Amino acid sequence: MKRQTPSSMNRLHIMALAVTMPLLAACGVTSRMEPYKQSDAVINEGEHVVILARKQHANHETEEDFVECISDALAKGSTGLDVHASKEFEDKMYPWFEPSTAPLSTEDLTRLLARPGVLEQVRTTGVRYLVWLDGSTDRVASGGGITCAAGVGGAGCMGLAWWEDDSRYDATVWDIQDSESEGTIHADFKGRSVMPAIIIPIPLIARPQAHACRGLTDQLKQFLTSPQGYGGPAAPDVG
Amino acid sequence: MPLRLTYRSWPRLLAATMLTGLAGCASEVIVESTFPSPLVEPLPVNMGIIIPDELYNYIYTEDVPNQSLWTIALGDANVAMLEPLFRRMFREARTVTAVPLTGSDTDLDGVIEPTLEKFEFDVPVGERDQFVEVWMQYQLTLYEPDGRPIYQWPVSGYGKSELTRNREDAVQRAAVVAMREVGATISTKFAEQPQVKDWLGEKENGTTAASGPQAAAGIPNEAPNAE
Image 1 (tube, helix red, strand yellow):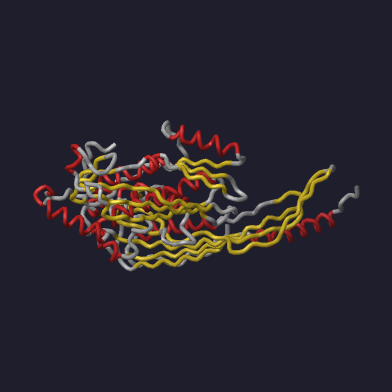
Image 2 (cartoon, helix red, strand yellow):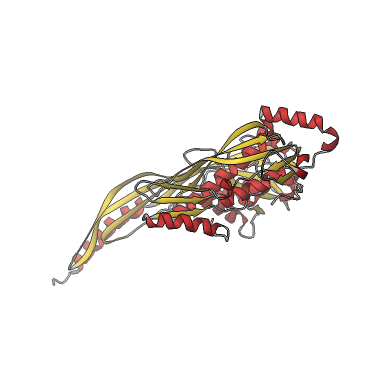
């Protein structure tokens, strides 16, 4: 075998860098957050928040694990909020938060709370703020390909595959006590994953949904604990 | 939600499984869940409830091309959904076996009988960004105590659930969503049906002294003989 000279080693390093850097640059998450708050309401001691998914859409629906992610993350840490379990809330309020009966506007909410026993039941849950999550994570593009082969001497793969996922969510905050909408946070996280294969496939996976969960949680915490005047688009991050 | 097999469900599923299992690849689902009582104001009538055997033992089978032979047992879920629903919807709900009513049941204002008329489901072949869908249609028949039918009301429910690796689990979750929808429609729209509204008006006028104040929603309604 031919021995590599220092100059050929350098060339190899440069080639490896030339291949790796674009791949790493191609793999990442870009984000856009647009918070809008129209009141100075904040969550007080003893008040709870509940996260619910909008289920009226035929084609998409916010994923259950995303709702759980936001609920868990909001409750976590020293600055955690009192979060009411979504399923438990829907059960206690049954049948008024099912896909066909859930209030679509704050006027609907006012009418719902006027029904006998409904407001009393809400009070027993301690929930003051209701966060409606709308949106989903979808694959918006994909391409490339990997070919694998196996023989007597061994097996291996060659090629490059990539795909792009888009996590778009709106979190709309309602104040149940005052029957009004407090504002909306729009989050759009795009993630491109790549998988080069040189003998073995190396997945470099971007997780825009996980980033969207973290981003929305931070914004929601700020939304519910800071009076009017908060907010500002988050800087794009690369994951 | 994990599948749970109960003592009562086993014999029914066993029979279905023996038939379907022989045919090759088979998927079995026993839909089970707990359903909450609806937060509604009870209607001021005392009702008899007929749960027919077909509803208790409802098993749907369908051979889906390029997939498998599906067997979906809905009997336990039917009972779990309908019993607390009717118990909360009416001032009193009592299980009866048939109309016309006889003996001590003649004091009831009417009888309601639910049946499951249609069940459809769809499990996509792919695994990403897709949902399992379930659609079902019940029929509620309202009878006078003497057996005269007053109104037949078809009530449908639709449910979907993210398709996961466990297709049976996804079907189970979609079916539960559809059943919750049915329960929501029955509990919120039954009294709004024109014929039911008229019938309730007649009953209220005829039994004003007996009706009394309606119980507040949220307080469990006693149903001495309901199972």
